[in-house]
Length: 116
Image 1: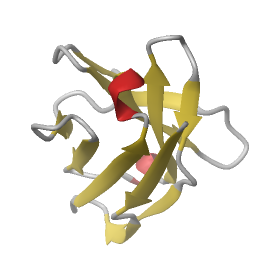
Image 2: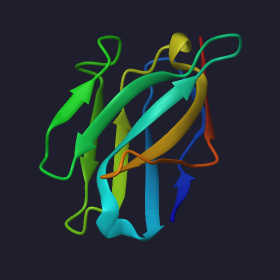
Image 3: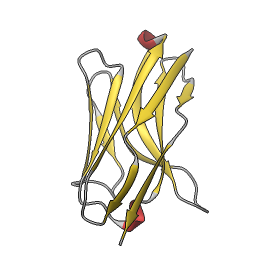
Image 4: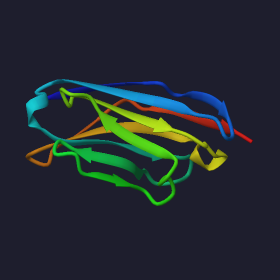
C-alpha cells in the first residue's frame, strides 16, 4: 500500500502562483510514476502532469509553460509549481502514485481556487 498526503492548495488571484506538494509513504519502492490530476465541478478528472522514476515528464497542453512538476532525490515527494494561474485552473487537485503493477493510489485532494 502507498499513502499520499497533499498540501499547498488555496485561494489565489489570477496571475498568481501556488506550489502543491505530495508525500508518499508505504511501499514506495513499488512506485513507477507520480503526478497530478485535477477535477473541476461538473467535469471529468484530467491529467495535469506526471513524472516517472526515470524522469520522463508529461504535461497537459493547457498547463505547458506555466506548471512545473518535480521530485526529490528519494522520489517519494512530488511538487507541482503552478505559475500564471488562470480561473480555469480552479479545481480539486489530486496526487497520483502509480505502481509498477499498474495499481493507482490517490491522495485526498486539495482545492485550488483562482479568482479573476
